[in-house]
Image (cartoon, rainbow, N blue to C red; front, top):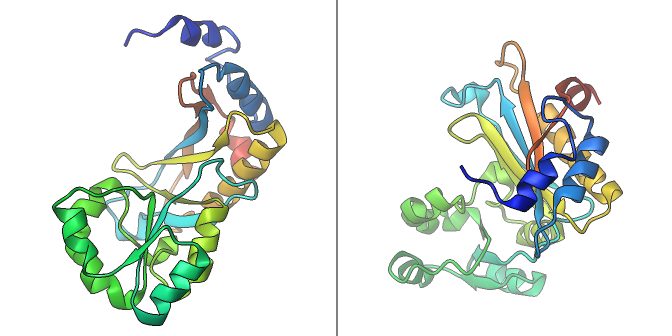
Length: 232
């Protein structure tokens, strides 16, 4: 892949063969985020899990202390008093069966997270083939299938992110913006790492975290010292 001049310049700011602790890595990534927009800072973790096995799956959510720096739009599937509660809690969109054709036929995706009350999952299940591939399907482990819609909405708006294994057993998570201070990014990073270390499946043998990289949207990846991020 051909890289731009800025990317190649940023590569000179650090040694790609070396691994760094989280504070050094975050500093390099911030210095390398030279795009004209506020780049997202991301963490990518290659695990030793085998996601094909049910007892080695990882999925959960955590609220970042300094938020994500992104305005998140929430769609809630609920009826009656729970729909009223969702509106009062600040949901951007609230509805039930009437939303199915809008999503299925019209390709409506003007939202970032979908929350549903348990009684609505029969309805939402019909959208599995549409919402699933986009990572929008509500899930109890992620806190998006719940009767406490107020808490779910507040957590999501406050900076809740979801972490899960992809097909290659890698976890990809955003943890802030390049405009954040190093301290804010460091706190968010540590919150994610604490949650992921805690979520280690007991069935995983050998190394749980094989490698990890911090990067920004347009910048190069900086390799992390795995021993330090696993053991604190």
